[in-house]
Length: 286
Image 1 (cartoon, rainbow, N blue to C red):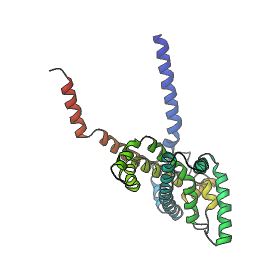
Image 2 (image 1 turned 90 degrees about the vertical axis):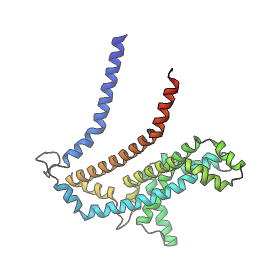
Image 3 (image 1 turned 180 degrees about the vertical axis):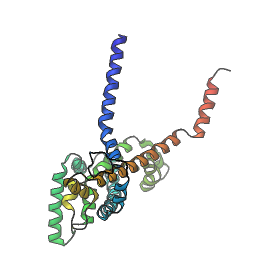
């Protein structure tokens, strides 16, 4: 019995170790080879930071990074507004005519292949430009396209958060004379802040990383960072890409670390620690 449990724990640890290596070995190799002086990214010569200096002087990458950040911020903000309204409607209004159709339209991007969405949006934009003269294929079409597929993810996050909020809080506020708008902005919205932040970050990440849809709806002068990286990788592995990937990894790690520290400080505050000590003293026998 004991031997069987020991073998089970050993197998579990081996599988966890294999999963960690499988996930993080490529990331570690990218970081290591970003400091390789050799032009050959798979052959180590000696330590150097010249590829980071070259990255800072690459106007194409810097311009594409600026466009990607602008698109990501705009599309994440737009997705937050539309996704929040959609999630609120789906969570709070259980019965209305066309609810199933509305829900299907909101959630369709979750299961629809990106290439299908890219072709559909391209045809839509081309048709609208021919009829109305707007929009031209540039940053605005990319933002609209990213809002289209990111809204579903924000709606799911917001709807899940609203499902965990006690409706009696809103009902009590309305019983005390608060109007629906006041209930939403004073009661519901503050309770939704964690979901709103998560939804915005999720939409930002999806926009910053998108390649397929952007390739269909972008135009001259609106090349994003993933498109530049893809074009450079097609011509062969470039050490600058390793440096760029390392910068992005460090930025993501820094943001995640700050978020974890903020959460830890919220959980372990001095007030809560003092209250816990007082409760332990009261519970202990005199």
